[in-house]
Each structure stands twice: as C-alpha cells, then as structure tokens.
Length: 571
Image (cartoon, rainbow, N blue to C red; front, side, top):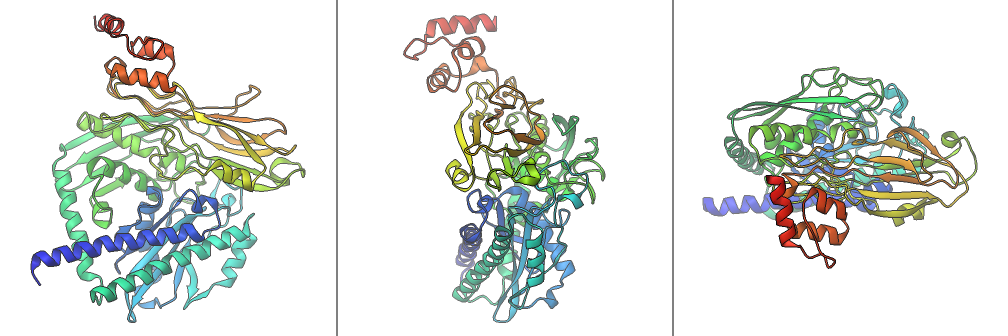
C-alpha cells in the first residue's frame, strides 16, 4: 500500500471518528429527558485514546463542556486505572474541579473494548435539570449548599447500573425522573460511540487505534505549530471589567506567544467572591483555550494536540481559580467572558485579528415555582430554563450576529416548548432596536423578551445576568453595545443577580445587551445603514446622528446630504 494511499485512508478514518462522536452526541440529545440537553444541546461528547488524550469531539456541544471534559478524563484514569476497567463499566462525577465547573454537569466516562482489548475511552457530559440544593441561584456561600456532590465513582459495573447511586441522586433532585433519565442517556451515548467504533475497526481491519491516534495528533500538532509560527511573538496585557454579583470584577489577561506555546496568565484578576459566581480553573481554562483557538486556528480539528499548545494559569484564590469548597453554580457568567478578555490581548498583538466584545454570557432565563420558592402553594410547581442570548461583537470583516450565544454555542429553547411544559407565557420575543454597537461593522442586536404566567400564582426568577453595568465595548473606534436591562412590565427595575419572585399578574421584561461595534460608524456603507433602518435594526436618529447617513422616505440613501454630513465630521 503506497504512502499516499495510506494517508488518505487515515484521513477517511479520522473523518469517520468525528462522525461517530457526532452520532454519540445525537444519541444523547435523542434520549435525554431534560430540555436543556434535548433541545439546547448543552452537552459534549468525545473519544479518547487509552492515555486519555482526546482524539475527536462532537461538533454538537459547548466549549465549556468539551475542553474541561478533555482534562477530566485523566482524573478518571488516575482514579480507575485502565487495567481495572472491564466491558460494561462506566464512571461518573459532577465534581466541579475534576469535571466541568459546577454540580449541574454530569460527566460519564466509559472504556471501549474491541475483541476483548481496551482500545479507547468515550466521555459525555450533560447539564442535568436539577441536582437539589439552592438550584441555580448564585446566593449560596459554598458548594455544599448548591446540590448533591458526586465524586468520581462507578456508575456501571459489568453492565449493571449502580442502583444505590441512582436512588441517592433521585432523593436529592426536584425532578428525579429527568435526572435519572439523563444519567441513563449519558451511558447510552457512550455505548453508541463504542458500538460505532467497533464497526469501524472491523471494517478497516484495525486491532487498535495507536497508529490512527499518532496520525491525528501528529497532523494536528504540525498544523498548530504552523498557526503559532504565523503569530507575532511577545507579551501583551489587556483588562476588562464586568458587573459581578455585589461589586465589579476585573479580568487582567497577559498573552505570551513564543515559537511553540501560547500562554494566557490572569495574574491581577479580582479575588474570588463569597457568592456562587466563582470559576474553577478547569472551566476558566476551557473558555480561555476556546478564545485562543478562535483566533489562532478556527478551522483546525480540535483535539489533545491543540490543547497541548495552550497553557492557562491563574493565581489560586482569584475568581478564575477558586478552590473548593467555593460556591460555583453560576461559573458560566464568568467563564464565558474569557474569550473577550483574550481577544483584547490579540488586538494589541495585531490589529484586525479580534472582534469587538459581545454579550458573551448567555441571558438564560431560569424560572421555577413551588411552595419553597415563592412561599405560596397556589399554582403548578415547575423548574424551567430558557436559553436566550444577546448580540455578538462586530468582526473586522462583518456585522456581529444577533441574539447568538457565542461563546457557549447552546441553542435557544423554543418558547413553545417552555409554554407547553410550564404555566409560563411569552408575550414578546423580538430583536432589540439600536442595541448593536454602531461601527463600520455593527454589533449584533440583543433581544427583548416579555413573559408572565397563565396562572394567578407567583414564580421565581434566578437572575444571573451580565453586561448591565458594563456593556460590551466597541473596538477600533466602534461604539459600545447597549447595556442589558431587567425590569417588570409595570416599571420597577430588578437587580441582574439574585432570586426574584414575580407576583401574580406581573410580567418580566428582559432587554438583552448588544455587541460592540468595530471601526468608526461614519465609515459604514451608507447602503448598509439604510438597510438597517428599513429592517428596524436602528432608528432614524441613529442613522442620521451616529452614522451620518440621510435617507429618503423609501429608505434610499440621499447621497449628497450624506456626503455633506460625513465631510463635516471629518473636518
């Protein structure tokens, strides 16, 4: 067999490996009980070699889950050595420091055998509906109040589920059926991956994955080195402030690029909080690494070789490296901001590489009702999450996307599903005009959601929203995006973090932030401004006063008047 043909064959098998982990993820979505997994895709799935090095990840999933899961598999191997693993075994944890950052995420790891030999490890992570404690509220003061903590332990032994563990999990959840169903779905997901791998190995006559693993990681390593070689070398520091819980939080990121490594250090970042907005280093690492890859090698397949060239550090005790037993349930609103912090460094390294800041942390509406939450017994008890998002920052080459959950990648849950499962009614869901930061390329728009209950009963909102006091900043002369607003339809403003009880008959209004703009607004194509005005993305005042564009009644551009306005600005 020629070397050229063998390279093609290996590439086909690599693509096949990516395809089978995607089927692994799709299995998890099809059989999961929770809408968070089934509809939003808040999950990850991947295959690892016997050394615990990730070979392929599913496209479906979030960077926070994928990258932290990539590190967590080695914790499982250390706890359960390969020589002790048997066919039908599976292991589980929701340890925030050895998993994916908070108790809501369950990671299940399963060995895969081929003809009696352990050849790979499959891992899957899912955000479960409820794990007890104070639920998604960031008010807790330690991890013990946030729910049931499951250390690394066996879930299946030779195909038999750990019935006592499931019984314990059910006893600590407000939605025991969904929780148990999601745990079974994680096991099924890994079993699907293992079955497809066995079929592939039979088809290609493989006894193990060592040669394919070497090809995948070696090829990726060479490509990653080439990408790093194209970057400027040196160190750059950038700072970014976000709202925090009771006081602002400052990120200070220092990016260092040498011939082989990219190092991001967060020395100077704010100390950890007494509230549940802290971030374990595994989750901070996950989103920082993702931000780096977005700039350095966005189209490169993601695996261990990519991760091995990126090092993330943060002083222990800062909000990005909070040790146990710190409260961490809302770590996403911290971690999901880190790509923007990294982009600030890359912008200093070379202008034109990084987009403007965006909403970043999703504006997920977490709502529930029940006697223990609202103090009243009237109305149906429920627990619901509705993933929603503000706007992305503008890119140097294009407008930011509206209402898009970058960097998490979770899907918005259709409002009809939430309405069918709860008493909630969504009265409004529309793009928020003038929320995208003006610029040569415009920031993505946020959205406005207004909702209430069909019942004459209160419901609780677990608020954990960012970009209210510190909106997304524009870049290279672009303007900031609009700040977020949380209020009642009757007028009163609500704090963006904490638990709120929405009274019967009242409606909640969330005006989600917009992304920052890129470049001076007066450099935006007048035709693009006119189109934004026609589509309702901006108002007439913004078109004339900010973009300096004059339009006629039919939304065509008055070229002469526009030139006069813009000439006056330049003068």
